[in-house]
Amino acid sequence: MEKEKMKWPFSDEKEIEQVKEVLASDSWWRGTGKKVLEFEKRFAKYHNIKYCLGVSNGTHAIEIALKILGVGKGDEVIVPAFTFVSTATAVLMCGAIPIFCDVSAETFCLDPESFRKVISEKTKAVIPVHMAGNVCDMEKINQIAKENNVKVVEDAAHAQGGEWKGNKVGFYSDIATFSFQNRKVMTCGEGGALITNSKELYDKAYLVHSVGRPPGDIVYDHLVLGSNDRMGEFQAAILLCQLERLENFTKIREENAKKLLLNYICLFDYLFISS
Ligand SMILES: Cc1ncc(COP(=O)(O)O)c(C=O)c1O
Image (tube, helix red, strand yellow):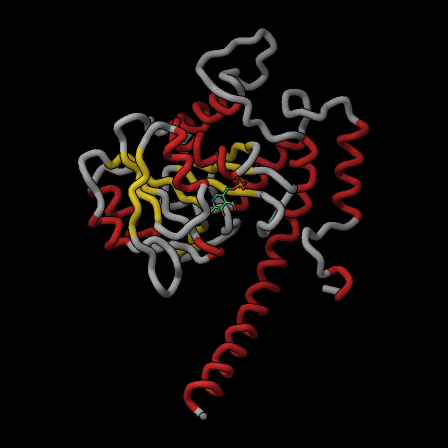
């Protein structure tokens, strides 16, 4: 990457072309446009998951996920003690109580054994957060969750394309949610998504995120109670370009991480061992 282009958010002429296309169309919302649909298809495919729903942001994505899993008043949802506030506030927005468990000191991700310890009769779901792109031990978390009849929602706000044992995020859970806010690894300023292999959950999420209206509705058919959490066509147009670059940018980040780690080890050695 050239030095002058190392700014964030990164964009080039591809984003400009995509946004121009939406501007020239009469379709700036998903109701009549094609960009959100196209992005959802590509984002789902990239994660080897059947369904994706683009939404307004990562906070709403978690709220929708909990709602469609039936989380409500009287329920408890286990969240890691170290995360962005939305992981816990989404639980409160559903009328449930967030219960905190510890994170690993090495990865800052939810510690499976600490999760096991705080499970109660009221536990309905757990939200492992892939902190800063570090993917949680999803196999163990999923196993503990299954043993205790607990639903799993991965908060993958930081982990687009992240993997655990060769499987991309979303593989081990009921639903995984993402943020495309300005500082995330791919961004459209504000945006979010959820992915799932369940057609039933996808259909429910669609209704809830679109004021209760099914896809293609033109007769104001509000089937369930829901808010307007739809992604717009401009956001999706930008995300299509960002997704195309994600694989390459991830490689660059991994190379940079190795260099930073090496510098850190050298500094540690200089300060505490050699001196
Ligand atoms: C771990 C985590 N979850 C959820 C969110 C919420 O995402 P958004 O800002 O798109 O609502 C964030 C945002 O920073 C986050 O870091």
